[in-house]
Amino acid sequence: MTRDAFIAAARAAERDMRSVFPETPLMRNDHLSARFGADIWLKREDLSPVRSYKLRGAFNAMRKQIPGKSLFVCASAGNHAQGVAFMCRHFGVRGVVFMPVTTPQQKIQKTRMFGGGMVEIRLVGDYFDKTLGAAQAFCSEAGGHFLSPFDDADVIEGQATVAVEIEAQLGALPDRIILPVGGGGLSSGVRSYFGTDCAMTFVEPAGAKSLAAALAEGQPVDVSPINNFVDGAAVAKLGEKTFARLAGVDPGDVLSLSEDRICVTIMEMLNVEGVVLEPAGALAVEALSELGETIRGKTVVCVTSGGNFDFERLPEVKERAQRYGGVKKYFILRMPQRPGALKEFLEILGPDDDIARFEYLKKSARNFGSVLIGIETSAPSNFDALRGKLDAAGFTYTDITNDETLAQFVI
Image 1 (spheres, one colour):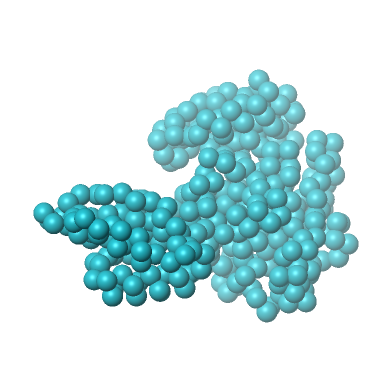
Image 2 (cartoon, helix red, strand yellow):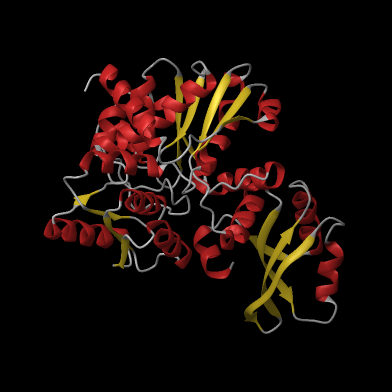
């Protein structure tokens, strides 16, 4: 398909979906604009009916298959499942959604709610590979249509409607668009629509750099094991069809951001702007800090791809943000087992230091005990003063804040 044909198809899809749900807003963000000296706009896909852009691709793929197919099958534990369920109810067709057994009940319930009785949910496998295999096998046996979350030409075309709306809402092309990347459905669709008419930055989580790996190897490669924290963009292998549209991307336009760093943006957008973003939805906003002077004075659109955030994760997100910001650390402290030792340690703490965790782990010797201690403070520099006082007092300690293996067991 030529670019002109793709543009025409995406525009037709965008017109058709207006009978199902309204366009998502493109909103100028004064806070970010002032901070970066640029004209920053947020394309609020987190405000769609299912709080992500995924229903776009589901709509476009299903409208092209009906009435030929009356059964649609997918494998997903998140936004894709909800988009498919929403569209099954809209079109009045049957859907079967396969999810891992470990899927949180909140996501299962939301998918069932959006399906409105038209969707059956099947929990299969502890890991997604088994879930996907079961879904594809069932689909083949039942004669249904399998809806890939990203590696499908019609899905890609549907996700490109994000670009159609940006162009119409802004009234011109932005200088730069920042897009999160998982399997590549959104990014390949937007890139296919805009081509090289505006600059693009592609952002993926550091624990799942599937686009960067594909560009380096010249083909999609499996980057397992991946970090699933940014669940909306944590994909082990870029799609074949999406890579065909992203193969010409300059590797210098691909950024990776640490999972902890993304948490800083989630907390900032929640506390300052009242905007609820899931980790994948915060990727594009956090990338602004990396671009720095290159965007000063420019018009920039960040696609906030989703807002399906489970608030049970908030304590973990806050924890990760504090650790990344250097205002919370964990130590293993060797504490003398004698009267007054704890008091001596407490007197070392500064006025802004707060003990967030204190736990005896075990006695390492008759006269000493190992203590896990977590400390929050107001500024990273306070830890330099604390270490100096601990050293002067003769305390033995180990900073385990960034030791992921050890932290999994004791924090």
